[in-house]
Image (cartoon, rainbow, N blue to C red; front, side, top):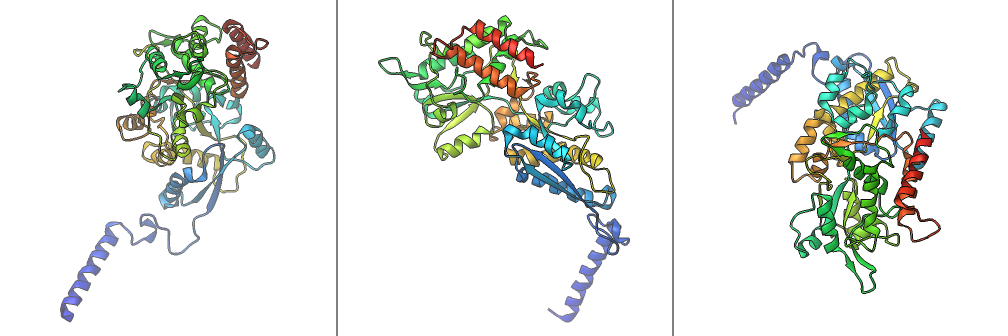
Length: 450
């Protein structure tokens, strides 16, 4: 190549670079996208602390870095925002730890709250600024259950939802194929028939292999949620779910009986009792063919079985396919009124700006992909549901019909419900109660918590 050709190529490259420079209006350097002036101080650093009991720092890493890049731009505030997420591993004492942190002035600026906790935390929370999200936007963006849980009757929004989890039906694919089942049961009547055929009893009537890890109390993971799911389904009539469902109303009593009947040896679908091992272990050890569980147990089952167990997930059965009800649980990030802040900007406003940014459809996928969860955003949930290759598709398909059961003190209610179930299925005559006795006792204890 001659010197003249090399010179010509160099001139052309220089021309292109200069043209690009002026296209981006960069001669005043601070206008260049994603840059700061050559002279002057770097962007101020603002650190926001965030805590929660389940997520890891890595779960929030990508969306936090994207927000930081956004805020570093001159037109977006010119700030270097670091989101310092800390997992509180002591889940049992999570709320006490949060209160102690606030009492000692150590934050946090953002903390995760369980969906049923919002009513008792309202006075301690800074609501979502109306300029970021009004009532109409909230209702049009997120699933109805989050409107019921996170917004007051007056229209105050206390948190923005990122995901919704619902129980679904896990089943052993090989056992289904062996018994000639090509599809999962869609109704609870079908579930009973499947359970009967899949359960193996020895000559003495002892359970060798359970058709389903279903019907127990303490030895069934989240049996409390299964009972609440069944109660809500059974109380749902003609598209209407009563705003308050009593533990001892006829529909709920019927739901409790349906559930605990699976532990009755006299029933044709008898499959479980108090002597069975924990439901997740029974499923992963092939001692139970079906179980009802949440999406985060996908990884749990895969890990416990080394990826060998072939299992599938189907929508949870319904009493009436025309009026579906799914049970919602989820955690939401919220901004407390009291939090430390060392910045020239309002950390409260910045915290909400971050959460609003992270909850947007184009950004929340970073968090959802990291946690493998179904979106609370209606459009994104529909996209997930339509993707059959996505492990979250079944859970996403249940988001639109998800509802929650208000519980002011969920830990106390969980304990009461477990006691209720265990007292019904126990063989200890000194502890055993009829369904009506157990339900009445549970209802009175729950009422005393309000």
